[in-house]
Image 1 (cartoon, one colour):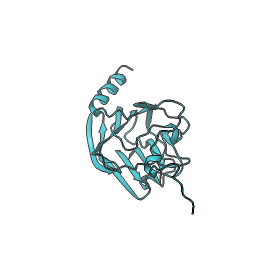
Image 2 (cartoon, rainbow, N blue to C red):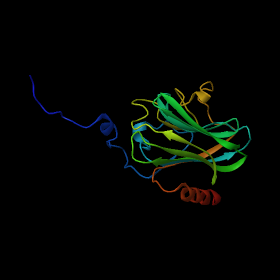
Image 3 (cartoon, rainbow, N blue to C red):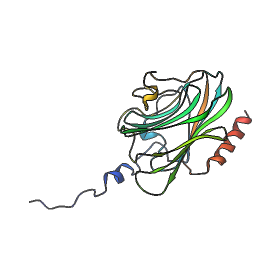
Length: 213
C-alpha cells in the first residue's frame, strides 16, 4: 500500500479559477474590434464569478439591422449580445444545460447607440448568480436573473468574437442563421468592463467619448 500526500489538494473549481500565465496582465477593461481574428478564451477577458458590463458602440443604419454584436464561448457554455427582430437580446448558456435570456422591451432604432448588457453579482455563493440588465444608451430596457458558470466556457476552440458567432452557436435562438454576422449597421468597438463600477458611470463615460467623434 502506497502512502503519500496529493501533489495538489485544491478543488477542481479552485484549479480552474487560478490565474495562468498570459501575454498581458489582467486589467479592468478590454476593448475588442470587429473584423479581427477570434480571441482564444485563455487570452480574453475573464468574467467568471464577477460583475461585468458588455457595451457595444454601434451605428444602426436601418430598423432591419440584426446579428451578433459580441459572442464568447459556444453551445456548451457561453454568452452572446445580439439584435434579432428589432430587439436587443442577451443569452447566457450555462454549460449547455440550460439557456438564460433577456430581451429589450423596445426596438433598437436607427442612429448611434451604445447597446449594453450589465451583470451584477449578488452574494458570494457558487455558482455566482445575479441580475443582468439590458441598456440602450442610458435607458434600462429589460432584466432577468441568471446563474453564471465558475469554469471556462470551453477548454479548446470557440473563443471571443465581435460581429459574429462562428462554430457552434451560443443560443438556439439563431442556430439556423449560420455565423449570424451583424448587418444593417456598423460596430465600432465592444468594451467589456470587469471593474465592478456602477453601469451609469461607465455609460456616461462611453457617451462622452462617442459624442466627441
